[in-house]
Amino acid sequence: MATAKKKKHAFPSAYTVIVIVLIMVQALTFFIPSGKYSTLEYSSDSNAFVITDAKGKTKKEPATKKTLDKYKIKIKLSKFKDGTIYRPAAIPNSYHRIKKPKRGVFGTINQFLTSQVKGISDSVDIIIFILILGGVIGIVNATGAMDAGMKRLSEILKGKQKWLIIIVTTLIALGGTTFGLAEETIAFYPILIPIFLLAGYDTLTAVAAVYLGTAIGTMSSTINPFSTVIASNAAGITFTDGMPLRLLMWVTAVGISIAYTIHYGEKVRKDPSKSLIADQMESDRDHFLDTDMDEKKEFTIRQKLALIIFALGFVVMIWGVQQLGWYFTEIAVVFLAVTYILAFVVGLGEKKFVESFVSGAADLLGVALTVGLARSVGIVMENSYVSDTIMNYFSNQISGMNNVLFICVLFFVYVILGFFIQSSSGLAVLSMPIMAPLADVVGIDRSMIIDAYNWGQGLIGLIAPTGLILVSLSMVNIGFDKWIKFVFKLLVTIIILILVFLSVGVLIS
Image 1 (cartoon, rainbow, N blue to C red):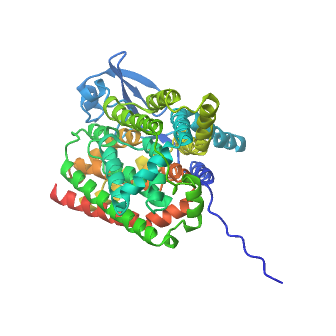
Image 2 (image 1 turned 90 degrees about the horizontal axis):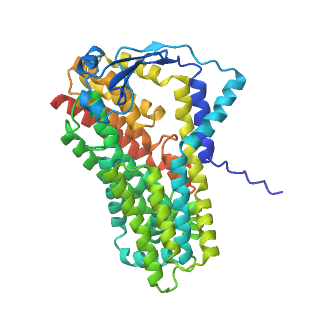
Image 3 (image 1 turned 120 degrees about the vertical axis):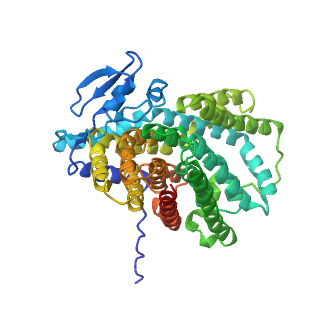
């Protein structure tokens, strides 16, 4: 009698991974004491600083440099008044334990469920953007414009496939280092994945080119207002301090990432069996590519016009984010406008047009929900008041170290903090008033603290389930385990690179 074949256990889906992390973090909150720093926040209505202590009591003090000096906050007064520092800043040496919020069995279950619902509701602007984007893509796909355009592009790329990785990663990394291009890259996957498949790569190569661009780009931030600029202001220095080292890090880290992706992608292109997702390559091609792609098809005026309008939507999006500070509500409005313009251009007919939009939005519904669920982990941390406790613990542990050891350990501290606190601006304003003065104690330039913060909280983004990586992987149904296997060697390489840069930076500063 033939032996029954053992069923291969599949790695959990993105949803399950996030829920597992949520449960682990929730369990940790029972063991980590609750505590808070007092905070200082500027109120433009009363032109005064609002001081909030650990127990939630508030008082107002004059919005003057004297008040900032009193609380040992080195941030310039003008940065509060012009809105650069728009979050409450932690006051050094003000940490106090507070009573842990009471939670019985039912309270814990309630927090577990409520945090997920609140995470989705807090992410509604991103979710709406993703669904509208999916609808637009559904319309463009229904016209055949995407397939015809991809076919034409694949002919142009023949023999030049490496440049696809180089161009995509470099451009996205430029967006990351300058204006924090991150969640917006979700929009690029549906367009770029078919191009990568036609070039002979797998979907993992496409994810790597896009995600490494945004992750390494934002990690190596130079003038990103949401990390480098706000962190520098919170540390009491200008964002140009230490710029040469950051530029060198960007060039080196992005260059290594591109070479790493090309090495993997070319190996797969020459021998598809070497792909880490070889078992799904055929189904990926069926899903993302037209089965009749090899047939000669006419590239009509309507199709060209549809692609031009679609592409212009991205141009407007990037311009708005970079120049006008747009967020997802404004971006969603742009693509909704694209939808209405396409209605008059593509000639699908009312019923087919609506069906295509709804079908396209449905394709990205899972991705949209993943974004909301990932937010739930941060909500549990906030409601349990453990983030400040972790910050206080680490700041006490590293304050007496020698300068090289201090900056290297601080990098790993920010790796841990970045896992729990996904907001780069939130982490900057919370940590810099606490960590920046420690640079003076060990005798190093405060710009090195900014580097440790940038590179630590940025690096963990490569693998943190609470970040964008699970959202990106869910676009192409790639398991988190496959991504870890792919990125592990690069992760180790970048860690070594960062430790070398930090050590050299301390010695020459």
